[in-house]
Image 1: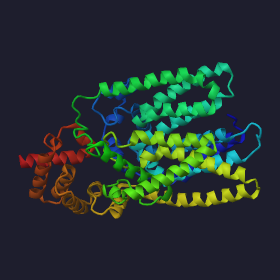
Image 2 (image 1 turned 30 degrees about the horizontal axis):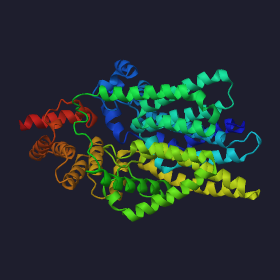
Image 3 (image 1 turned 180 degrees about the horizontal axis):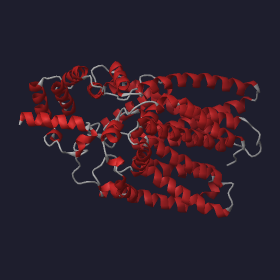
Image 4 (image 1 turned 45 degrees about the horizontal axis):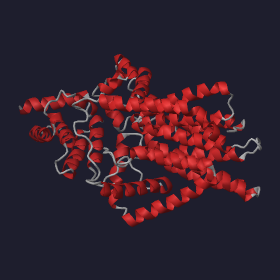
Length: 518
């Protein structure tokens, strides 16, 4: 497709602007899974593991994210530069997100560009506004601020590189088609090596090729076919090489529903919540308990889905970019659906890749509205309205950046939105413990134990730690005894899974309590 010169100036501007606007998040700490994976864990900090990661042997190890070698490689690269300093990891995620926004800008501008009107500013304007909609949406803060969620950034980077290759192929001489095929293969493999949802990359490439190349699509079929073979081989290897008995995932995720019909109903509710999160931007959280789904009744869910389907369908008919965006939204969501058991049915990070598809549809709508109006003041009015919307998005984005700055703010936000949530008490207790406030940690742990009805081993363990630190040794021994009764993790305190939950000091303290009891 045609790409005017202006976007090549606009892309660096988008990159720099997004990086600057996300600067506040660089100053945060480790807040969620990165506490265990980066701060407590040792795997990514051991240079001898590079061989396992690059050779894919890590997929046979009982390690966190063993089937996401590209994510592990990126974290290990950060470790080699920053050690355990959180700002460096966050900076890398900010730069990746900024690069994704710039590439999304180029994809939209190329798809909307017209060779007959090389000086037309509307495609560039629509692309810039749509890319900023994606970059500044509050939903993406979870991915940008949490290094362990970086896999979604890596997936989207690979998808956007592949789409840029496809969009540029029409203007390429025949000798460049081999390079294009190689790039598509690499993009597909790197996407699935970042996260399982990267399996959506190849179908997106196929749709993009069909929409924008048509008669030339056959020239990309070798790359698409080879990419499909390698992706299938990767997924089969990940399954075949999985550890027979996993310690880290000793308790696998449970199905969302006992049968298919119930699962479909629940998935409709989940999808309705996700659409509301995109367009209403209310109630965003680091954790969503079951009451979120209970709060949206089936008629309301069907109404939301019907309105969204109608609106998306109208935009998809306006321009082929709109249809490509719709397919990226759908294909990006499918791997994160709950037909396969997942630990978290809902999470903001699941919408990172689909949101890029929504941005493509937004760019289509902006461009078509400006072009079809036929009046010179319309593009200015549309741009002004979009800028107001972007200002509102960034205000909410900044608030989410503050929430994701440290564990205290993160889990206090969850507890404020969903009172009585056990995982919030656990996060606050652990954060207070690390800060040396053992009495405050004990109060959070005690509330969490009551909220979980004494059925969560980790809350009982943190309660035991806090009781021990505050001189209540009898209570500490009792809580650890209850934790050991619930989980094998606390029966044998040398299990590697403990290093992903607790610091070495906390593990040593648990051993002291165990020696006191037995």
